[in-house]
Image (cartoon, rainbow, N blue to C red; front, side, top):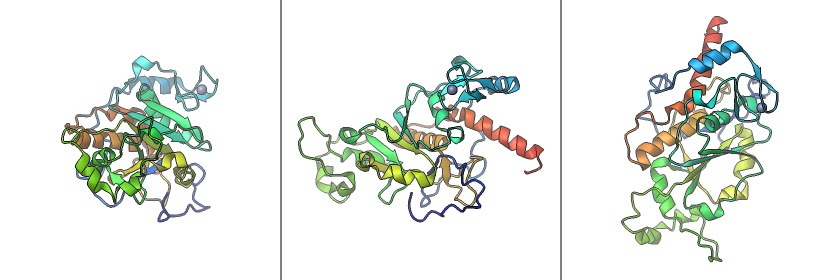
Length: 298
Ligand SMILES: [Zn+2]
């Protein structure tokens, strides 16, 4: 993560249990998101199966025998609920999530994405990650780096990255250099290419922000165009005290990316298509808030 982020303090109670946070950019404001209560008004499937599972209590995961409620964050499987009972979402693009091996699994929301969109989400544990070199004209990495572009700018930038053919022995220029050398390439773009987003896959990093730095500097990710999200405030209950509220949980980052992609790249009106990605997140959010209220902390 960039150097302008506050360093974790030893006394911070969240220091050892911080969850995977994606930082969204702070240089633009969101017009389509209400500032307060962004979780209200979502089109979500009924939470009745989760309420039933909750009243049944923790159960053994059928795969690893760990004691779990709702799902197993180690095996990425449901516990006490069947797949038919929960919503599934078909995504317009593939999602790769790269997890840091030290990430405390139970604190990560990456599992939510895998359970709700099982056909389109793949979770990798660093350092076992795919090679994206030959696909960098259609793959982006969500990360707020100094060279990051917005979702709106992403399609144009991807179209400017030449496809690497199998017999191409020379390395194509990296996207960062392309930024300054785009003019001639821009002219090469045919009209029918313009307005079509070539994006096929998005990579998210699921780790605490101090671990993200090790992953982001991996050379296999260096070639990818980096995309940052518009400013959105997190609703995550494990939000690090003292860190900006624009640090998002992984599932929030995935949801907001897809919403932006839908509206800005597919140019379609958003009608709640991906809201169910937050199915578990909203339920757990309610549970935590109710527990806090009961304890007199809210
Ligand atoms: Zn398990």
